[in-house]
Image (cartoon, rainbow, N blue to C red; front, side, top):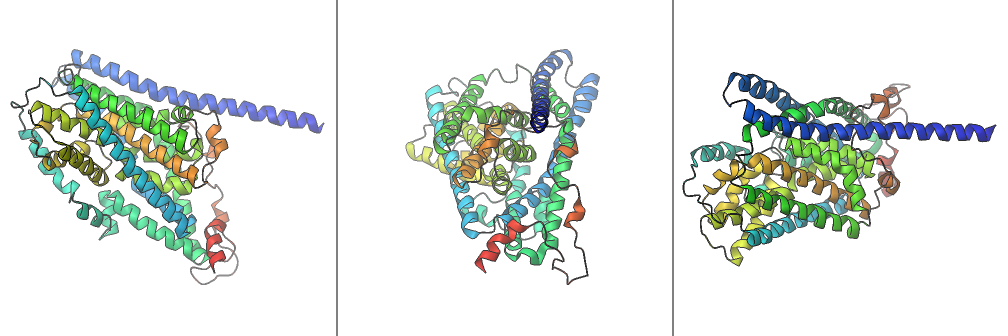
Amino acid sequence: MATEQTQAAEQQGQDETKKRGKKKGNVTAWILFSLAAGIIVGIICNYAIPQGSQADQVLIEGVFYFVGQGFIRLMQMLVVPLVFCSIVMGAASMSDPKMLGKVGIGTILMYLLTTALAVIIALALAQVIDPGAGLDLDSVDSSSYMSTVESAQDTIGDTTLVGTLLNIIPTNIVSAMADGTMLQVIFFALILGFILGRLGSKVATVNRFFAQFNAVMMRMTSAVLKVAPLGIFCLIARTFQNLGISGFLPLLKLIGTVYLGLAIQLFVVYMLLLALGARLNPFHFLRKMLPVMMFAFSTSSSNATIPINMETLERRIGVDPKVASFTIPLGATINMDGTAIMQGVAVIFAASAFNINLDFNALVTVVVTAVIASVGTAGVPGVGTIMLTMVFQTVGLPVEGVAMIMGIDRILDMGRTMINITGDAVVTTVMARWVGMLDKRVFDDKTTAAVDISAEPAEFDEPTDYDEYAEHGEPVEFGQSGDPDKFDKVEEVHRVRR
């Protein structure tokens, strides 16, 4: 009888696993279908609906724009509170200074290294292909571009090395949250989380608040992701309707060079880093990350991809939340490999088009400047092109050359954002493997989807009985715990070191 019951339970578990795998596969299919359908519909609309017509105003600039931008805003709405709570909890549970320093320093160095490699690959590739040969940029009208640059300077801020380092420290954390200045939010959250971890049960109430609020944000994220296929379709359809095939044909060589560089970064640098640095199957990693990559491709926003990227790494790749909650928001802010590749190719493109020779010292300057610029670049659509101005000015290239690139910026932005977030995930996975905070069994699971958008709330692991977190018994002094709380791991290091 016991054997029959065991076999029945195993069969039921296998059936549930197959059902979940089928559902998650459908989610991946919907994301890919929305992306492909958006491209097809956008190109058709470009020919069928004249720009400025009534149909264009109602359908493209009305419905498609509203739904697409509304979805982006919903995702951006979640970024600051989700990142803040995740980093606070991650730093609190990783309160050992040695572990926090090992993960933090190692992650930052690896981010900078992959970005430098990305620029070198881009420069070498562009030198061979020469995408700017035969183009005449003397007739480029830069007036609209320069007005965009001037309006963006306040957003970018001081881009010098000293200025970038000082800008990490917030003068007003409330203002930093309101402005979405993620480096400052991350800096404050790390300090707060570290202190909470060291204090342990003395601040149990505050720890419980962040745990519960993080659970709320994860539930809200799952709700917003349910409309992802529709939002992706509208974003892509409007992009290709406005651009059309004729919009990028003159610069097809530039686009091809950038995407070839992105492919080399993905299939050579990242895959070798996973295979040799972490002893993991890189193609298995790609299968699980594919929906996240397509999501980033369609939204062109690293920040908007933070929730789904963290969710995938924790639940599908097996990265400990303590690591992912720190490295992914940090990567979305300072790790811009795709942007660096675009900047490297654009430099050679403009130099060739303007017949300007760049010596070895100028190329080294491009590498250093692009790496520094990536640290100060916000993870929002289009800012990478504005930062390209700084790189151009550093090596003496006319900034008017960027004006022509802006015409195809959306096409380049989608690809470079996809590589940016994939680089974040690769570095996070490798770092988690190195410090022993990667669950290999989860990684080896054959589930391919990133996030089950159609999942019911009960399928998530956040606590449902929040009364377990409440203090019971006689009233005690504020800040003390009446009963043992749920933060044994937080207090573990603190108790040992006492």
